[in-house]
Length: 284
Image (cartoon, rainbow, N blue to C red; front, side):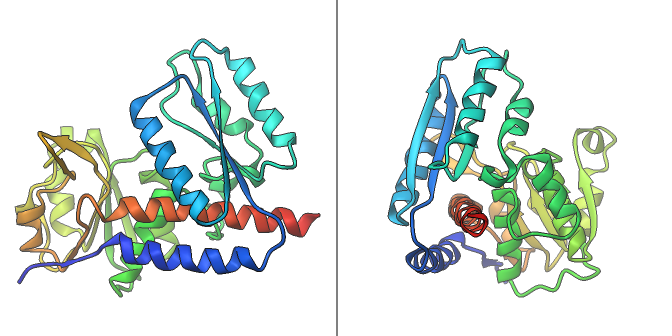
């Protein structure tokens, strides 16, 4: 029996419709400013999609493009200027940034109440305390997809492959908050030849590495929930980090790539923007 698909599109549409209704009840409009340092084709494509989604919800969207030769101090000054601008309600730092720039310092310069991606240490710390009103967009999308499967995470063995700051680490905290028995795998796990063992026992498997077919379908535990965050170009196709066809024969639920996590990640960004806007209105 083939796995049931966990599609992000219908969930994303529902969330955006709720946000649209919510914004209709609040005076004023949120405004997102994306800070881009230099030009990057992938970043430009993401910005274009971001702007389209924002405008459909009635959220103003602007891009502050800084020179690729901008200094760290100048970039921080620009972000602090946005912090002080009452008309700007959310800020996002577009990746990648030039190698001479320390992205973490720039993220820390964003006012936590305007941090649309929820990557400021103060916002990550809220997750540690179990406050998930907002959170990093991709982990929030993953949790929403798992929820849509109807699974109760309590006591389930959950495995995250990949320990990035934007996906693996915050996602592990969210899974722990649901009392999942959570493991994180990374390069050292693979080097010790232990990756297959962890995947074999995962009742909930989330993979976010960026390497096509890293996880073999035959490794998947029967009945597992598989969320594939990977987006990789292979020839003229977009594929995930998991061998989809083989994994589908063993999993109970699996996300397609594309169409799984991606659409929901953007919806979660919009949800964060609306939440921050509401909090700022309450403080006025």
